[in-house]
Length: 85
Image 1 (cartoon, rainbow, N blue to C red):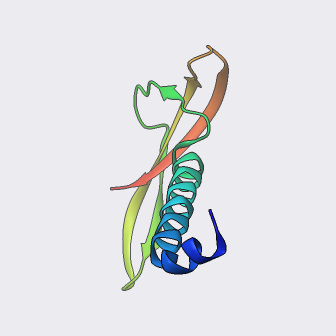
Image 2 (spheres, rainbow, N blue to C red):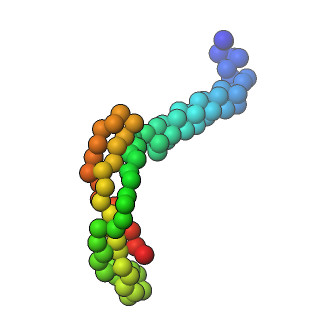
Image 3 (tube, rainbow, N blue to C red):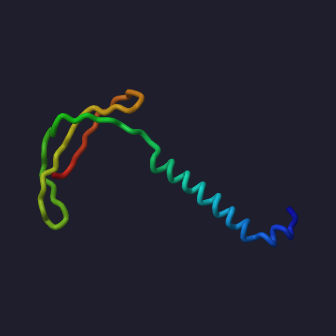
């Protein structure tokens, strides 16, 4: 491609560079957002509760769940999960 052809088609070159840049950023964000380990956990019930003060000065009960989680490779991990009522 000659120098004059690039000069005459500069908008196409800019659009292609932007398209490639957005595609690379989208792939990077997808890897960052959805990458990592996934675990599957079975919970039989709450193992305790505790008071939690939320914004506005309201006190609610928080519950703690304990269980063993496993990933797709059957690697086990002990997990503690909390939630508000």
